[in-house]
Image (cartoon, rainbow, N blue to C red; front, side, top):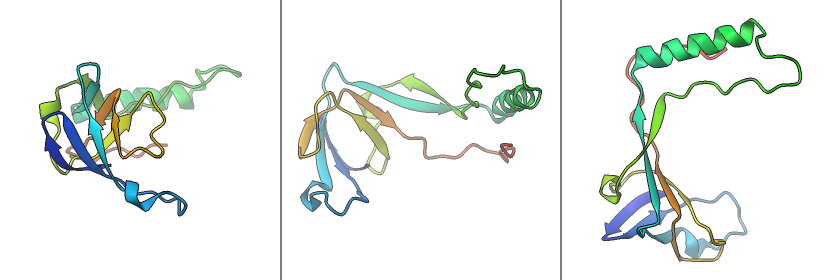
Length: 130
């Protein structure tokens, strides 16, 4: 969801659901953050590093270096996850929140993990993914 307010260890999120049967009163939820909550931000990689990783991945896939019956390695990503603090979260950020309890009908819940989504795209042109 999108952060609409932050008060101490309480984050208010606006969420959007594509399910017409979801309770519309749950579009705004309160996420509680405690000492056990892991907060993860993403640091953008240098564009040259990302391009080199992507080129190596593309070469490996094209050369068939993955043997039959095995999964190919995952493609590189342009951001690296880092553990951060609640103070890194700002109004307007997009978050992905995980909880250990079923939150389907909860207006307020405690997060086990909060991921701050990267908003700023990398600088420079990204190479096409084959």
